[in-house]
Image 1: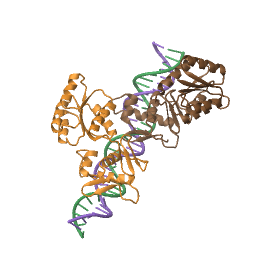
Image 2: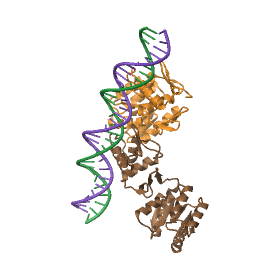
Image 3: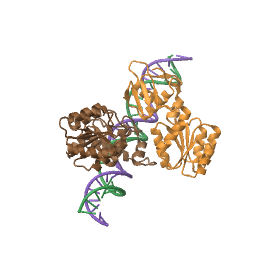
Image 4: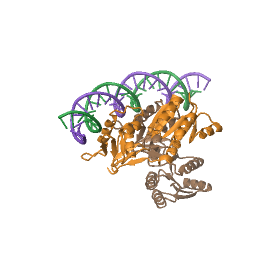
Length: 225
Length: 225
DNA sequence: TCATTTTCTTAAGCTAATCTTAAGCAGGCA
DNA sequence: TGCCTGCTTAAGATTAGCTTAAGAAAATGA
């Protein structure tokens, strides 16, 4: 799940970014209004949710919100605002936001709202599995035949993506965009390295790998395996 | 509310029974160990709280306590004891008691503790443990292999949080929010310092730490350890 | 109240895990 | 055969977390 966070206070932005990344989201940060608007519009289909600060230097969060809504009627938008009069929040919701949070807010609360909005979108699932392998995003644990397996962050994120799309082919470029960065060099071989790592840690000796290579396209985890 | 009191000194037993009955409890008295054990086990679901004398003729209060705990993990148990060295009380808590009172005690105090335990009785767990470590929120005590360990407030709070979530990864951001009530400061390394302190005080030399670090995410206390 | 002790927080240097890059290799496919 | 894609490995860069120490804050006790 990919999130665009538009927030100019770097301390707050960093805190939120870190927290959400620990929860398994990929987070891009825009530190002013113009940048936020650009990132949002250029990659509008990439993001699953938008977190917009109300008061941004340059273009305000409200304007970004309106622009996003022109392109996409349903993607969840949450406002983060220091303002707290009812009128203002109403104004925000008027502009097309789904929810708003008054600063300072507990991270727990932000997370809860995000999950509510994503659930209504995609059905919040926390466990993904194949016959032998199970991945639990809530608890951040991967097991093979019931035994826990140590994965690094990137390995975990990659495996989660593959399992979320079990049965489908995951294209290399999409994987890069989702797990690494929208702007990441597409000609990299990082993926190969991490696929290799997953295979080493999770395959059963002497059997076919649970990750199939689809030459020229990407990778697929089969429904059974 | 029904109470089982195991106490061999009839004067004390009568005094407590009368006092509690005036407060509206129903009190059954066992005057020796064997009788206490029988009454407890035969009607374990009947009693809302157990008051056990430490030194009973026949079977000791500790043994009764252990037997009760085998059947029921949560029912409150209070020890009444003439012994007063720290080791002895620790030994009692180790056996699964929730609280203890040194004789002679004021009746008021007994009543207060009973009320506290009954209030928190509704679902609230007060003892969290691993194989070697036990933490009791009621009396604010931590033991390792039965020996008390001195923890500071913050250390205790952190350990409690980790043990409450035993088996799950506790994310750094959440820990900071819960224990430090900090919302927007990501660059703190207090957690590291306190994890370090807990490890120093509670790990067994030469073995893996009971707190596992999950890089980029947080920490986990395993189910076994 | 002030002094002393304990506890908490911050910061800095260090270590080790993780990520990234790159290069050589293997095998599929025209 | 020869090219292309992906596999594998290893080395270097980067970053997260460990450890220590010192100063700040809070609790304790005269």
